[in-house]
Length: 101
Image 1: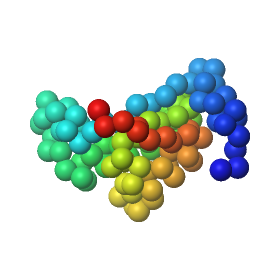
Image 2: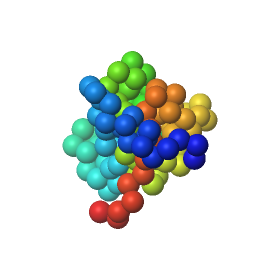
Image 3: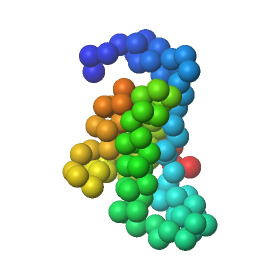
Image 4: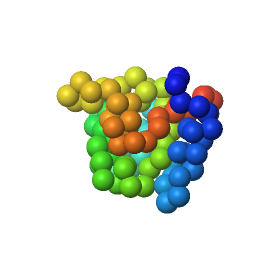
């Protein structure tokens, strides 16, 4: 990693920006999808996350970092682009949730 921790921390707390918590487990996102009548499949979860991360203007303007779930950090968009790369392209810093709860 070529960036210093200090630089990463400063970027994450940039004025007017915040963290996007996209770290819902498969079980949690299933409950949310059930409420709106959407089947929770690997594709529907990917599509949901991709929709958020591809909102480039909002991501660029308001999001400094994204907390990801293990499934998400490994997912690719429908076109094959890793979701992490989409996040990075907006200038946000991807990270992963490290606890199990």
